Amino acid sequence: MANHDPDRAFRKVLSLLHQEQTSRWEQIGSVKRIQERDRIYAAISRYLVQSEYRFDSQKDITLSDDHLLIPLPPMSKDTHLIPFLTVHYIKGKDKGVDPCCRLYVLMLGRVDGKLNGVGFRIESPERNCQKDEGSESQTGSHDFYHAQLVRNIKGWDFYNTPSWLPDSQPSFPLWAISPTDAALNLILTLYGAEFYLQFLREHGRHFTSAMSDEFKLFNRRLSSR
Image (tube, rainbow, N blue to C red):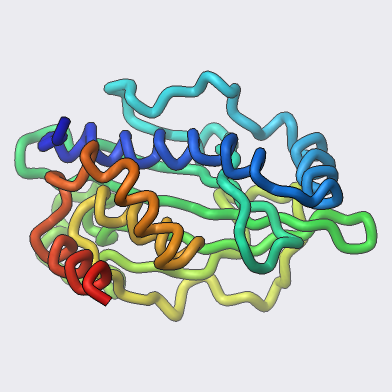
């Protein structure tokens, strides 16, 4: 059934992506990769959400504030890294107020027995996350949906990352104007077009109607190739 509710559609995309990780990992034929995944899961077990975590609650999603990570499906390239997701999503309290949406992807791997990581974040315009109403009239440097590299997440320090890695600029503009668009951009960014189009074919009925018109245009162009 089509889902026209933008909030529910966004949550559904995240929930479906979380569900995909189980079946995708089961398809991995490499015992070595599975063992490495399990070692990393064990090393960060205190940060992993419970398997029954549900995105479809009506509450704000504050996984990043709570220092919790959602395991993601494996990547087809750069397989020495294991991906995880954490989320900060605050719904607009009033009608017409856009949500504050921050999606953080952390990719972890072990080097010489030490846990190393690198990540990126996909964010809504920064004005959506500002509490100071007086700043709304000013255009911020990141007042558009964008992606950036990230050194750490809210000061998390359980992994090593290069201290010189930039985490403010550059910011890459995205073809997105809503959290649902942003979540789908995350899938494209991390897994590429083939994975994304399969995800769209299998699950699109749950969220396609909530895509922005601009992102629907992008999908038509991508699917026609």
